[in-house]
Image (cartoon, rainbow, N blue to C red; front, side, top):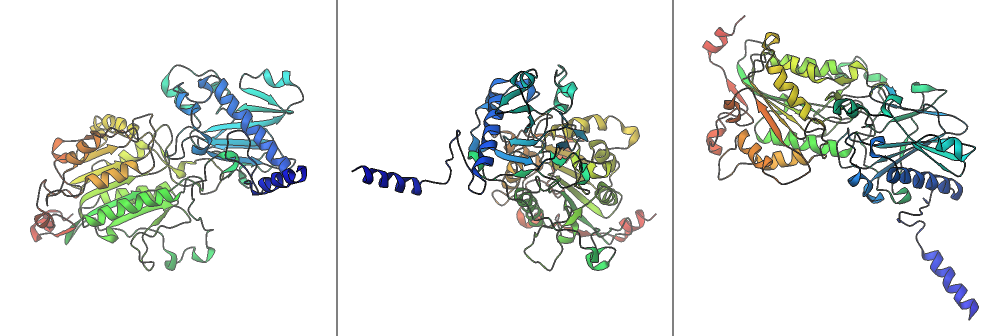
Length: 500
């Protein structure tokens, strides 16, 4: 009987999963038991810090109730370590996280469904000989000869000031880049997402980033510059769009960003924007297929803010643009600045790798398009609206009288990936054989009882809201609205009046 019981126990053990998805103990199948146990201890110690330490160490708003109740299965896990080497972690804000030397890094993304930036939790592991040495730091805990410490942007962030703007700057809103201390930011990035390790969620699917083909440099065959547009002498005026989407690095270049820009691109095509008049900027070194035809080039690498700014200024300076739509769906800093692409993979957002709000509105001043509609689906997009209202008052630098701005979040809020874009496209669909105006779409979206986004808007004049996305009149029949869509041939009188 004893041997039968033993046999049944062994059969049960063999049939058991390689690791359980419980919060207590998980051993990934591909790692050695010793290494798995070490990481499990680090994870448990980090989550213990989250539960027991003051919220000010993690979030500027001081509210950790929702954060602490998040199950592991709803969060993403990232880890980094190196054999016999110290590590450093850097954020796009051009800041090295402190402390500045450690053996391992553990990052938890509590809101994978939110757009970056949003708060992430970063913990550092240092070798510590005694409990006393570790516990002298209020942000640390001791476990099995290691000191687990909550990372900070700077030592000044330990005692956060009451000023909300300054406190927000202390939040770590991006998954950091991790390098060995010896190689520095020019070394290999070591942080990796771990799918389903220790009960955490599956990693987001990243877009494939291809190395730069040297054969393509300076050749027409691989031209990556958008086609220029005439500034004057137009035989026709057309509707144009600039779509700014994609990630800042491999962590943020996910398939969701591709889905968002596809949805917006099709929405514009359904409103008769010509294929060649929609310029889609995505992260450098990968492309997005939009029209289903691999023979056509649908996207342009966003390898610098200069290229993007040149395109917007070129369109705004042209008499050939009827209406202009600008869609913003990029990782965003807490000051509203958009991250373009980490071209040199050093983890820092250099000046050419970011697009600041002030620069954006400077590019839109005195725009000659009849209507400019800005749809901002990214975190902290409310700052764009705040600065738009401020910029309108500085008319000496140029007017913004033909601009409408619609945002998906408040000034310190985080946008859920794609929710705003999906709803905008859905509520823009014609009803009862009639086109819908901007004000109708906005009204429907603001009436939604959802915490996924917070729609806000402003325009230079009420009349702009009484137009469609392509600048047409409201409530036209579908048949009549086609006259306002796409391109319109200009009269000889119009061409003569705009001859310079």
